[in-house]
Length: 97
Image (cartoon, rainbow, N blue to C red; front, side, top):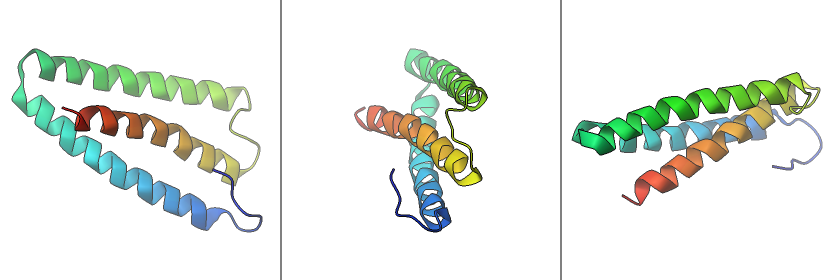
């Protein structure tokens, strides 16, 4: 997300807060799916683990290639944005049923 010039940390903090809210929703939805058990619950558990590993590896590659920027603020903002995309996609998928 593009920010106005000046101190970026307020926006980064709000983005982190928003990520936390959305992640909380995903945790709740996933808990319900896992509690149901069966093949769907098992598949969700496997998907959850593989997505976390893939997201971390992808972020690490971006960091190693300079894709997160050169300042603490840009690294923070891009890291939050990276995980927000993943969390948002999971919330949408899990909300559908």
